[in-house]
Amino acid sequence: MLKDNLVMLRNLHGYSQEAIAERIGISRQAYAKWESGATIPDIEKCALLAEVYGTTIDSLIRTEPIEGMGMIPPAPKGKNIWGSVTIGERGQIVIPKGARDRFGLSGGQRLVVLSDENGIALIPDEAFMANMKRAMELMSREIPEA
Image (cartoon, helix red, strand yellow):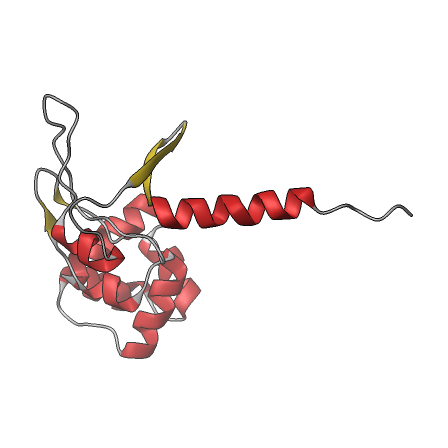
Protein backbone atom coordinates (compact mmCIF):
# COMPACT_ATOMS: atom_id res chain seq x y z
CA MET A 1 0.00 0.00 0.00
CA LEU A 2 1.17 3.53 -0.77
CA LYS A 3 1.43 4.72 2.83
CA ASP A 4 3.63 1.75 3.81
CA ASN A 5 5.89 2.28 0.80
CA LEU A 6 6.27 5.98 1.58
CA VAL A 7 7.41 5.22 5.13
CA MET A 8 9.79 2.44 4.01
CA LEU A 9 11.31 4.46 1.18
CA ARG A 10 11.75 7.61 3.24
CA ASN A 11 13.50 5.68 6.01
CA LEU A 12 15.56 3.66 3.53
CA HIS A 13 16.83 6.86 1.93
CA GLY A 14 17.36 8.60 5.28
CA TYR A 15 15.03 11.52 4.59
CA SER A 16 12.88 13.38 7.08
CA GLN A 17 9.25 14.10 6.25
CA GLU A 18 10.19 17.76 6.01
CA ALA A 19 12.99 17.07 3.49
CA ILE A 20 10.70 15.08 1.21
CA ALA A 21 7.90 17.61 1.49
CA GLU A 22 10.31 20.39 0.53
CA ARG A 23 11.59 18.46 -2.49
CA ILE A 24 8.10 17.99 -3.91
CA GLY A 25 6.70 21.37 -2.89
CA ILE A 26 4.20 20.53 -0.14
CA SER A 27 3.96 20.99 3.62
CA ARG A 28 5.37 18.45 6.06
CA GLN A 29 1.85 18.02 7.43
CA ALA A 30 0.50 17.08 3.98
CA TYR A 31 3.25 14.48 3.58
CA ALA A 32 2.59 13.12 7.07
CA LYS A 33 -1.07 12.62 6.09
CA TRP A 34 0.05 10.52 3.10
CA GLU A 35 2.20 8.34 5.34
CA SER A 36 -0.66 7.88 7.82
CA GLY A 37 -3.11 7.05 5.06
CA ALA A 38 -5.40 9.95 5.95
CA THR A 39 -5.05 11.34 2.40
CA ILE A 40 -3.33 10.29 -0.81
CA PRO A 41 -1.25 12.32 -3.26
CA ASP A 42 -2.49 13.21 -6.73
CA ILE A 43 -0.83 11.57 -9.74
CA GLU A 44 1.55 14.49 -10.32
CA LYS A 45 2.82 14.27 -6.75
CA CYS A 46 3.14 10.49 -7.12
CA ALA A 47 5.34 11.08 -10.17
CA LEU A 48 7.54 13.45 -8.13
CA LEU A 49 7.73 10.96 -5.25
CA ALA A 50 8.69 8.15 -7.63
CA GLU A 51 11.43 10.34 -9.08
CA VAL A 52 12.79 11.30 -5.64
CA TYR A 53 12.82 7.66 -4.51
CA GLY A 54 14.18 6.30 -7.82
CA THR A 55 11.25 3.99 -8.45
CA THR A 56 8.16 3.94 -10.67
CA ILE A 57 4.66 5.14 -9.86
CA ASP A 58 3.44 1.55 -10.24
CA SER A 59 5.99 0.28 -7.72
CA LEU A 60 5.24 3.19 -5.41
CA ILE A 61 1.54 2.35 -5.08
CA ARG A 62 1.85 -1.42 -4.82
CA THR A 63 2.90 -3.49 -1.86
CA GLU A 64 3.52 -7.16 -2.42
CA PRO A 65 4.71 -9.57 0.22
CA ILE A 66 7.67 -11.67 -0.89
CA GLU A 67 7.57 -15.24 0.36
CA GLY A 68 10.11 -15.72 3.11
CA MET A 69 10.94 -12.00 3.20
CA GLY A 70 7.71 -10.27 4.28
CA MET A 71 6.99 -6.75 3.07
CA ILE A 72 9.85 -5.09 1.24
CA PRO A 73 10.26 -1.62 -0.28
CA PRO A 74 9.62 -1.16 -4.00
CA ALA A 75 12.50 -2.05 -6.28
CA PRO A 76 14.46 0.79 -7.89
CA LYS A 77 13.38 1.86 -11.39
CA GLY A 78 14.38 -0.76 -13.94
CA LYS A 79 14.99 -3.41 -11.27
CA ASN A 80 12.80 -6.25 -10.02
CA ILE A 81 12.51 -8.28 -6.87
CA TRP A 82 11.05 -11.66 -7.81
CA GLY A 83 11.20 -13.31 -4.41
CA SER A 84 13.50 -15.81 -2.82
CA VAL A 85 14.47 -19.30 -3.89
CA THR A 86 15.84 -22.28 -2.03
CA ILE A 87 18.89 -24.11 -3.28
CA GLY A 88 18.30 -27.85 -3.45
CA GLU A 89 20.78 -30.43 -2.22
CA ARG A 90 22.30 -30.72 -5.69
CA GLY A 91 22.41 -26.94 -6.27
CA GLN A 92 19.18 -26.66 -8.24
CA ILE A 93 16.89 -23.64 -7.92
CA VAL A 94 13.42 -22.85 -9.21
CA ILE A 95 13.15 -19.43 -10.81
CA PRO A 96 9.87 -17.71 -9.81
CA LYS A 97 7.14 -17.89 -12.47
CA GLY A 98 6.91 -14.10 -12.83
CA ALA A 99 10.61 -13.92 -13.70
CA ARG A 100 10.37 -16.87 -16.11
CA ASP A 101 7.41 -15.25 -17.87
CA ARG A 102 9.04 -11.80 -17.99
CA PHE A 103 12.22 -13.15 -19.59
CA GLY A 104 10.71 -15.96 -21.65
CA LEU A 105 12.59 -18.69 -19.78
CA SER A 106 11.52 -22.30 -20.19
CA GLY A 107 12.57 -25.76 -19.06
CA GLY A 108 15.80 -27.01 -20.59
CA GLN A 109 17.02 -23.53 -21.51
CA ARG A 110 20.68 -22.89 -20.71
CA LEU A 111 21.66 -19.97 -18.48
CA VAL A 112 25.12 -18.55 -17.83
CA VAL A 113 25.92 -17.86 -14.16
CA LEU A 114 27.82 -14.60 -13.57
CA SER A 115 28.88 -12.94 -10.33
CA ASP A 116 30.56 -9.99 -8.69
CA GLU A 117 31.26 -9.21 -5.05
CA ASN A 118 27.56 -8.48 -4.46
CA GLY A 119 25.97 -11.65 -5.80
CA ILE A 120 25.13 -13.74 -8.84
CA ALA A 121 23.18 -13.19 -12.05
CA LEU A 122 21.66 -15.62 -14.52
CA ILE A 123 21.80 -14.65 -18.22
CA PRO A 124 20.23 -16.65 -21.06
CA ASP A 125 23.04 -18.43 -22.94
CA GLU A 126 21.93 -17.00 -26.31
CA ALA A 127 22.11 -13.40 -25.07
CA PHE A 128 25.46 -13.95 -23.37
CA MET A 129 27.00 -15.56 -26.47
CA ALA A 130 25.67 -12.78 -28.74
CA ASN A 131 27.25 -10.16 -26.46
CA MET A 132 30.54 -12.07 -26.37
CA LYS A 133 30.56 -12.34 -30.17
CA ARG A 134 30.04 -8.56 -30.50
CA ALA A 135 32.82 -7.91 -27.97
CA MET A 136 35.22 -10.19 -29.83
CA GLU A 137 34.41 -8.47 -33.14
CA LEU A 138 35.09 -5.06 -31.63
CA MET A 139 38.37 -6.27 -30.14
CA SER A 140 39.52 -7.74 -33.47
CA ARG A 141 39.08 -4.47 -35.38
CA GLU A 142 42.31 -2.63 -35.95
CA ILE A 143 42.52 0.85 -34.52
CA PRO A 144 43.94 3.22 -37.15
CA GLU A 145 47.25 4.86 -36.24
CA ALA A 146 47.29 8.61 -35.85
